Length: 71
Image (cartoon, rainbow, N blue to C red):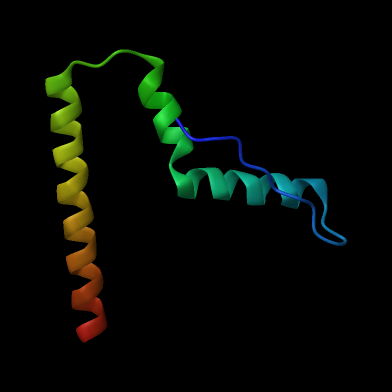
């Protein structure tokens, strides 16, 4: 699990915007997903299956992006 992450308020930044920025940072780092995954025990085979599905989805997304950029 990752370490604590801090977001310092910028000049004239509202509290809502600060929280939104923090939430975006946490999602980008994948911490929220990691916490949800660690909440319950998953069988190793299920974890492998899920990882494989994610890899396939990433590859498809990357191919779509490359295809879009070439056109």
